[in-house]
Image (cartoon, rainbow, N blue to C red; front, side, top):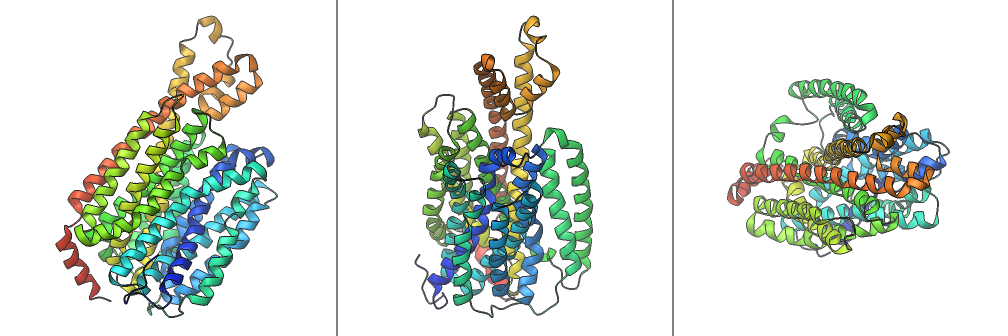
Amino acid sequence: MSVSTAESPPRGVVILATLILGAAVANMNLSVANVALPTIGRDLQASQVSLNLVAVGFTLGLAASVLYLGAVADRYGRRLMLVGGLALSIPMALLAAFAPSIEILVLARIGGGIAAGMAFPTTLSIVVALFKGQSQTKAIAMWTGIGCGASALGPAIAGYLLEYYGWGSAFSLTVPIAVVALVLAILVIPKNLGEETRPVDHLGGVLSVLAIGLLTLGLHFVSVPSSVRFGVIVMLASALGFALFFWRQKRAPNPLFDLAIASRRIFWVAALTGLIVFGTLVGSMFIGQQYVQNVLGYSTFEAGVAALPLSITMVLVSPLAARLIRVRGSRFTMAVGVIFVLLGIALMFTWHEGASYLPVGAAFAVIGIGIGLAGTPASRSIMAAVPTHRAGMGSGMTDLQRDLGAAVMQSILAIFLTRQYTASVDQQLASLPASEREGISEKTASILSESFGGAQVLAEQYPKYGDAIIEGARQAFIAGSGAAITVALIAVFLGLLVTWFGFPRKQQELDLEAEYAKET
């Protein structure tokens, strides 16, 4: 971790390690819940809706709060907000680990997300405040690569713990990391980091929490067939919230989200590209980990380990992204990264029933290369577009592109996966002889077409037909995942077009950055 140059603060390596650990706490907590959901459902007798809330709770708390809390940190102290967020994350993780009911678990996950909303954006704000020039680019590359790599590492560690311990172990695994990060933050992070002196737009902050929180919830419920109508209503309420938020930002004397800054090309293009790229990271994990378990027969732990190449390559290529930015500019670096993401998703089409691990690991590895290359310029460009005293807006947007991107892409892919899965099951049932169709009740057909998990339950209830039920569900899942992967390819290709035609070339980028730097 070589960042100790004249452009770095004293003890720069230790400070950067502290900030990366703080980001890792949030990133790992984002990804650990999915592995534990089946066990939680059984032990706490939770409904599917409740389990969905457990899955989305952390993202909800984090995405809804990052813009507001980033602005609060800019005004009242970034070190204070970082320490407070890390301190709060510890009891929230322990409460989730030992939750006596599903309701307490949901609340703990939302609380953990809010704690991450305090700490996560602040880590990047402090990087930008303390590191300058090429040292800053390297620091952001490491923060991006290692921090995001933790989100891919989380399921593997959680899967291993679940082999030997209860589901609570998945939520407590970040506690020791948070403790170390908290102690280091108190000892090494400076108190004064060029904070804002003007008042915070609290009304805008509340509106941003409502708008983003409702959108995150709405996207999640829309992807669940039984709650589409409720999801649409929530998303309409979110649209109203966003309308009020932007109305407020145009009129506030010190807006929470400066629309003039947001309109800068290096800001909005990087934000949109990052939303697609980071959303694809979560979406590919969402599809891929289900595929290797449902189709290839991997255990939970094996599924987590299968995705490790993504984490490894992401960390390895992040320093290369910093060098590419210096030589070729952010536009070229982001575009190359997005192309690798495209290639990695395309490799998922080579997966098939009975496939070896090679195509699985290759797809994850190539996606990791793409995220590692595209993530650094996406984060750096957003931060370069904002003055240092408004770093909270930039870091909040950087985090929001990940969290909201994850919610958007996962929900979109889930919709196509579910609909194609259902259509395939219905087609299989329709092709059965009339005498066999009459023996299948409406309730049984509904369970079969709802999810792969439902088919597994029926296979256990009717062992005589178990193999046929699982094979039919497996073929339906392959069809559904193919549809979802196609949509992911289209989304990433659109991201490539936005990056190539929307982002300025290297010299223009440097000129714009120099112009914006005068505001600091």
